[in-house]
Amino acid sequence: MDFPEVFGYSRIDSLPLRHRVLWPMKALAQRLDLLPKTMRGKALLRRMLFGRLPRMPRDAPDRVHRFLYVVSTEGRE
Image (tube, rainbow, N blue to C red; front, side, top):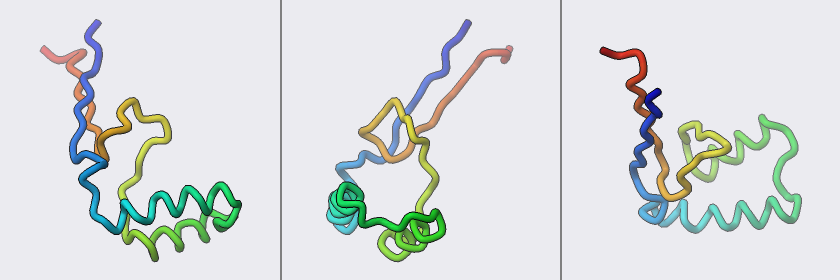
C-alpha cells in the first residue's frame, strides 16, 4: 500500500505583514470572546480584515506552510 505524499508551499513566516499582525490580534480576540458568534459574522469580519481567503483544513499535519498538496499514487499503473 502506497501512502500519500504531502508537500507544503508558501511558508507562514513569509506572510504579508498585514497577516502577521492581524493573526495574533485575532487569537487574542478569540481568547477574550470578542469574535462574532455566527458564521456569517465571522466571515464578514474575516473578509474585512484579510480579504478573500482559501479554505484550510482544521487539522493540518504541517503548521509551517499556508498551502498543502497531497499526492497519492495508489491505483495508478
